[in-house]
Length: 170
Image (tube, rainbow, N blue to C red; front, side, top):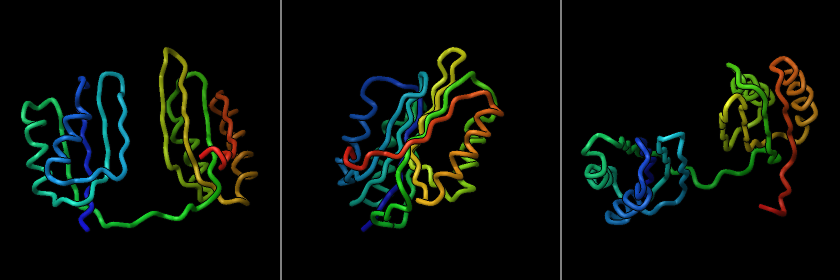
């Protein structure tokens, strides 16, 4: 089955999600995974669709991008199916004064321990910077990661918390 990765970005306005979903449904593309957010006044959407070829999907999205306010990309991807969890799910939060390199430093700690970031959101509100990430960590890596994150938190003058996700709640 054909699987497509689609991105849509541009200046936010009401109705973008509906317009994209209708265009995709119109050519038989079924949304299987998606994420969408508003970043200040900009819209960003990434999704995986099945059931349609790239050409018809590109054609269907062309009317939404014709005025230049939105950009859509369509790329065929290899269907991987559901991936097994690679570790124990955790939530990582970081907050403190905004400064260069916060995301780079904390995600490097995770990567060095073999952690996989599965979702990440950042927000800047005035001088306060917030990071919330979902991370899969190997069972035996948690202690090392917590210790290294404490060092990075001290270096960056931010607060970092790492906690396991209650799987009952998922």
